[in-house]
Amino acid sequence: MSGLRPLILTAVLAASGTGLWYGGQALIDLAKAWLAPVLIQGSWRQGLATGTAPPPWPWADTDPVLKLTVPRLDQEHFVLAGASARALAFGPVLVDREGARVLFGHRDTHFAFLEHVRPGDTVVAQSLDGSAARYRIAEAAVRHKDDIAVARDASAAAPLVLVTCYPFDAPGAAGPLRYVAVAAPVGGG
Image (tube, rainbow, N blue to C red; front, side, top):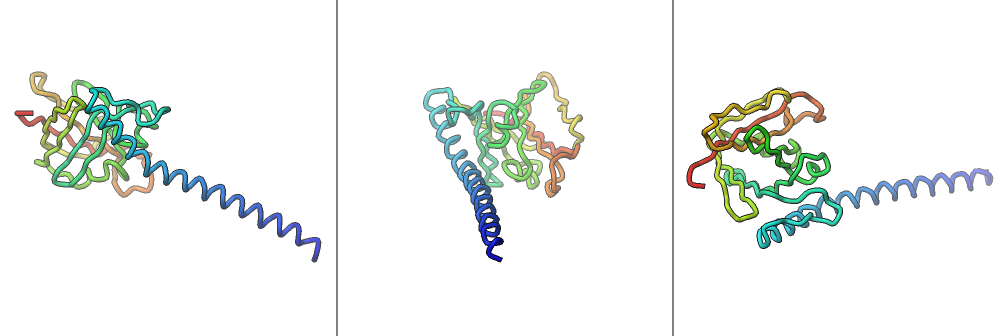
């Protein structure tokens, strides 16, 4: 029996060390989830003052380029430059595509509110120069990921298109469907 004691002690220590390692990783992830929005907001504020937002942290490969607000749903999100998966982890991302401003966001975090948008909702996109473009949700539909092009009149102002995975309550995000909300510009800026 005494020969088992060192083995049991080693197993307990290994299990404790593993638990501490994973628990520490979880704490780091929670800290990043809390700290990243604070740093992004600070970068945004500096960008409003100077006209160019710096990266929110030294190794970031993105920076905030818009502040998106949906008043009826009490939503405010900082939109990041570029469509990399790394940037998308911290907020919606902006991609200019076919003359439209297309924003992609995760359905279970930043763009979870899209489940509740409806035609007529106002969306405001503020730029770093302080100007704010107003849009109104014109349509929202489920589309295949290969069919999110937006048909528009070439003489009309560019729409704002909000895209997220669908369905909203799916256990994974690998499916082919997307929820696409198209917002048309409202005159007067």
